[in-house]
Length: 166
View 1 (cartoon, rainbow, N blue to C red):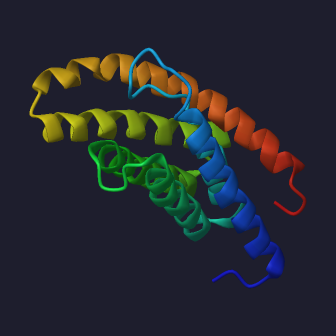
View 2: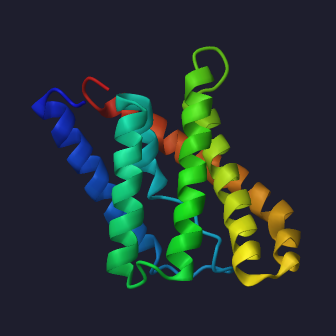
């Protein structure tokens, strides 16, 4: 799977960075509980673009599982909704990445993931709460996903450009 010590070290660094960013971002107040910039997705995107889908799945898994555990709600609604959205985001990014050579830049892959995250998060929250009105927040969520996706994609591209051998 990961054949070199360098790959494993990079994976560990990306996983721990994703976890720390997730925990820090959860302490920052936001105007809406589900609206975050998504800083913890930077290491996931760097893993995807630099090491492939398997690496990104591992980094995202660490972020979701340990972030939920350390955040105090491993099986709570926030973890379930956020975990489902994170997996949908990863699936969208992986799909866009496979098409990437001619179609999607790092920013495009990031935007696909951010938009998928927002849509899935609101849909799962709607199913979880039984409140169809939550879907009325979708337009705002998609705009937020577009903006955050561009920012996260730019930071990830900058990070990839600076990693040796990425």
